[in-house]
Length: 164
Ligand SMILES: [Zn+2]
Image 1 (cartoon, rainbow, N blue to C red):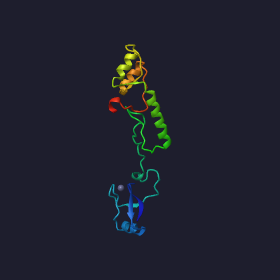
Image 2: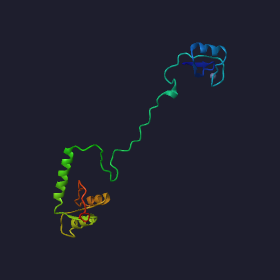
Image 3: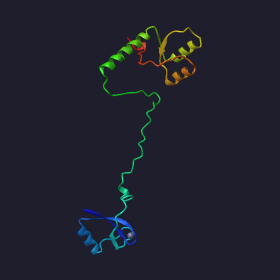
Image 4: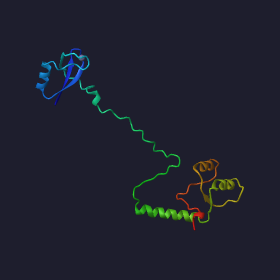
């Protein structure tokens, strides 16, 4: 198959597909060619079309940038990976977990009343002591806004009531 750029006497351009140049000549001679726009039979090979704009429907339109979600951390989002952890990372994490355990040795688990307890200590309503527990992101933010010293623990802590 060959493709010819054709145009009619009104200047409409269109493509014609032919099995050969002879086929084109035959169809033209038999009056089988006509303009798809105006139906004119006065069709001839178009002068070489400027490459710009030609076959506009075939150009690979630049896709709009995919709407990838922001890489920012959403509420409560945590960085995760399914990459296998190297032994070094595992060891380091175990050390860190151990360190956290030691740091919390003299700390009292207060569970969900952490915000309340730490606030009471901060305002001098009760003696200061080391506590740890659970706080929602909102609670933690409120505490920080109030100047109550809180820090997230790198590892989850098993509440004592869950331990046998
Ligand atoms: Zn035409």
